[in-house]
Amino acid sequence: MQRSSYVILSYKIKHNYDIKDFLNSYRYLLQKAIDVIWDNIEWIERKQKNYYLIKQGRRKIRKYYYVKRLTPIIPKSRTFKRSLRNYLLEDWEYASHYVDSAIKTAYSIINSWRRNYLKGKRKRKKPIVKRKFVRVKETLYVYRDDKIRITIKPRQLYLEFDLSRAWFKRRVEGWNLGELILKGDELIITFKRELKEKKSSERIGWDLNKKTIDGFSPKYGWIRVDLGYLYHIHRIYEIKRRRIQSIASKKSSLKYLISKYGRKEKNKAKDYVHKLTTLLTRIFPNTLHGFEDLEKQGMYKRSKKHNRDIAKQNWKQIIQYMTYKSRVKLVNPKNTSSTCPMCGERMLKLRKGQVVKCKKCGLTLDRQLCGAINIYLKMCGFTPSPSTFYRVVTRKMIPQWKVWMSRGRGVTTKGGKGHDMTLMNPRGGPSLMNPKGLIDQKLLMSMKIYQT
Image (cartoon, rainbow, N blue to C red; front, top):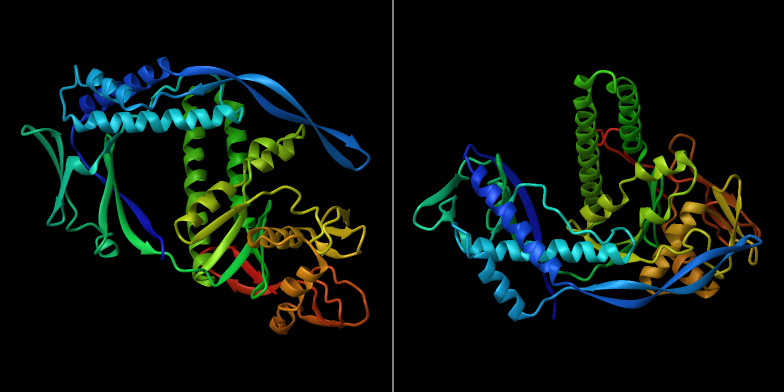
């Protein structure tokens, strides 16, 4: 039996309704719900397993220890939720269904804080609602004849929005209207459509790096996506903000430029990632994409330059956009670029870390290709072994190798038992030296995808 999932699209439309009082009342109601839930949280002292790293030669060994930490237990019983709803309804003058919406949103905020608190990213501090918005449930609006009618006060106050001339009307024909988000000057509309999931015929493991995304699959080989332009966006606006910050302390009138450039950088990066993920899903249809479950918090070091480079990355955003455009599977990122995909031993860095070599079997690979192969093996449930490597990586790759003469890059013939720098062929024959140019979209400016 096939599982059912939903594809969700969201669009914004502007409005001129004066709803400041309603937004302020809802924000106060939402904060009130958070306060009540927070006051009823039970704190239990539990042991938590932590570790620190000890260097032994070139290896790092984990030393585990236990610490006592307060763990929050959020009240979720029906009795508590019923009493909370009755308490919030006492002074509420708008539709009662907004109270249910506020309770649902409050629990979402508290649960998000709890997850980050247990990871050490948040302190024991109550969340504060600062943004003015209202989540409109499906029971609070009527959608008929391309018009949305939102109830604010039953039989007294309604908001109407006409979608008959909306630019996205053709895109969402036959789709169902989902939850709405009402703001001071705009309405965010979500549309959803049920989609039956098909079993993916192909799998690609993607290694996310500083300026590239490297993928591997037996069918397509080594795929490299150049993200130089995305890195260039962050770098340009970083330089602009530095220049402004040097004089902003003296001239307060220039401080608004800092936030202005921040918004521009965010929008340009978001637009680029949207186009990138859309292109990947079109080139590789019906494919399961595997990514590393990366966390930036554990990557920061003492080097300021390294920390700035990590902060510029859009890894989470790329994975997020791929999840609703295609199928995605997250794998453990531990030692993906430093483990030999053939024998499982540790890889040694050569040529400033770009090339790695196994100290046991002598396999030499590009470091990023090594990570992509290991991610592919993990998402398939394979363990590193010579038989798996020859069966999955090498034997299926040999018939797919083709001669591409682009910018002087093609194939060379190597015999003997030597290993190539990118992908070796242990039986001799043609082996690829470098990935070749496959696509260069003008729409995506400098984004390029290469494939072996």
